[in-house]
Amino acid sequence: MQKQPIGIFDSGVGGTSIWKEITSLLPHEDTIFLADSKYAPYGKRSKEEITSLSIKNTEKLLELNCKIIVVACNTATTNAIKVLRSTYNIPIIGIEPAIKPAAINTKTKKVGVLATKGTLSSELFAKTSDLYAQNIEVIEVIGTGLVELIEEGKKDTKEMRALLYSYITPMINKNIDYLVLGCTHYPYLIPILKDMLSDQVTIIDSGAAVARQTKAILIKNNLLNQKSEIGNHSLYTNSDTKTLKAILNTNHSIRYTVNALDF
Image 1 (cartoon, rainbow, N blue to C red):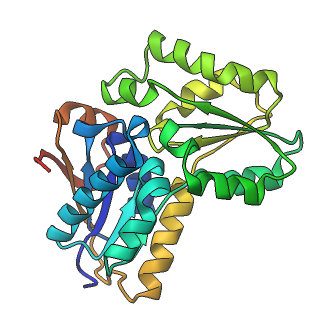
Image 2: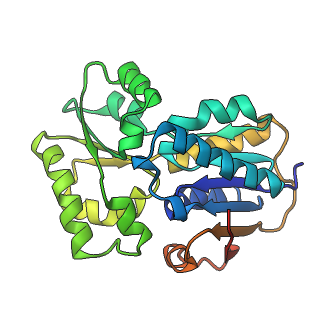
C-alpha cells in the first residue's frame, strides 16, 4: 500500500492549495486530486447533499486505489467527515478553519473568519468555535460568490476586489488582528487580502497543518512511500479543465497531468 497514491478531493479547484502543501512536504508521494467543480460551491448546499457528494468523491478515489484520503474542503469536512470515517476503513483527513491558533494568539481579542455558509452553519464549526474562542469576539462573514468567481477564473478582477472588500470591511472596522480563511479556495486571494489589510493582521489558512497531519498519519500507519524519485500527480475535474490548469503554477520539479473525468 505504500506505493499507492494519496487521494485528495475538493468541491472545486480551491483544494489545490492543500495539494500544493502536501506535494511540497511529501515530494516522493504520488497523488490523485479530484476537483468536483460541476457541483461547486458546496457551501450553499444542504448537509445531505454535501455528504452525498463527499461519498461520491471518496468512492471514486478508492476506485483509483488511493491509500489515504484528504478532504481538502472545509464545507465537506464540517458536514460529512463523521459519515466518511464511519463508512470507510481507510485513514481520512479533514480540514476546518484554524480558529485555535488565532484565538490563542490574538492581542485585540477580535478574530475574523471568512468561510462558506455550509462551514459556518455546521455543528463541527460551532463546537470548535465554542471550545477555543470563548473570550474572543469572532466576526464571521459568509464569502458568498467568491468560490464561483475563482471557479470562473476571475480571481484577479475588479469584481473580485469589490466583493472581497465588502466582506473584509466589517472585520477591519472591528479591529481584527487575525483573519482565518475557512475555505480552501480562499488562499488564492491572499495577495488581494494583503493589499486590503494592515501589516498587523495575520492571515491563517490550514494548508500547511493539513500537510503535516497527512505525513504524520502516513508514518503512523506505515504508509509512507519509500521511493527516491519525485512523485507523479494526476488531477481531474468534472468541468472545463481550463480553470484547473490556470490555477496551477507550473513547477518543473512536479510532474502532473490535468484531465477531464466524469465523476
